[in-house]
Image 1 (cartoon, one colour):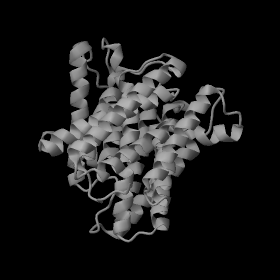
Image 2 (spheres, rainbow, N blue to C red; image 1 turned 90 degrees about the vertical axis):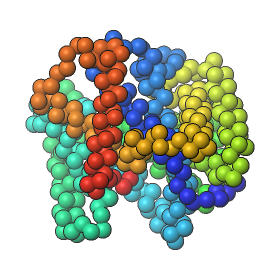
Image 3 (cartoon, rainbow, N blue to C red; image 1 turned 60 degrees about the vertical axis):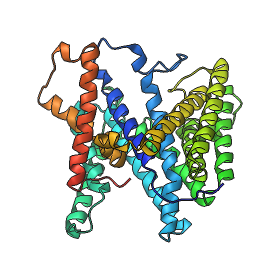
Length: 394
């Protein structure tokens, strides 16, 4: 089954935008009180998931949906597998770097490092933007070079002065864990290389998904005794995160194969989602549902949910021609990484200005509305900055 078109799929951008808005929203729930528990993350060993636990897997799935399109578009422009592979390595490495810096911000010992956590986050995010901005061709080359050099210098300085942990047991700059961006980077890196060097063949991608799911199941079943294998699949969420990405890859391949038969395409994807959902609830009897532990049921159920959401978005945007309904969140789908970084600046402004909101604005339904409006404000700012040529190219 080969993709039949290299065209960008608007429905994927819309689904990505919806997911990013939801991610900003749930990431802001920490600022609220008196909200329903089902909106938040569940504990690691709790069998279940809240709304927040569905956002990260959806994003991984959507990353996978974009991979075949990006690779085919690069091939259409004449790129060889070597060039495509190098581009994938660059993107993956960039996400790993960003993830590790933001994670070190979480563990930062401000007094030992000499700067507050909010300053660390702002300097890190500003450096990411300067380093990986899609600079317009009309930009002065010296401005671009100086900006990137300054960004690298800031990151090196931050890594050098970084001290994390508690007083008396300080750590230097280190990957405590890879962070959300880093986990996305690892899963993207491995999955995209498989798709690229298999020439986007469906059967290879399907086999990769089966292998990743099998490794994840084997890990949770205690069948993997090799320390090397455990270390290799660890950054991939015991291969579960890579399975989510490959699920998205397969979804796009099915979509493109049946693109001229939208009814059949939606039926195939819907039936696949039902099978995944049923398999996930059956597997729940063995491992439970847990985002933090990356259990097989969580992977299968979240894959099914994202696939169904894609069908709904495609039906609305393409079949019913309602894509305009989503235009106000468009920047979240096209300038997604900037949307992810902007809240760090917003929270820093709040801390520096000692901004506090009255309880009425952070409690219950009113608080949830506040967080939703905050997410939409971030998207609007990303759109505004995009018009000013601030657009991350990752």
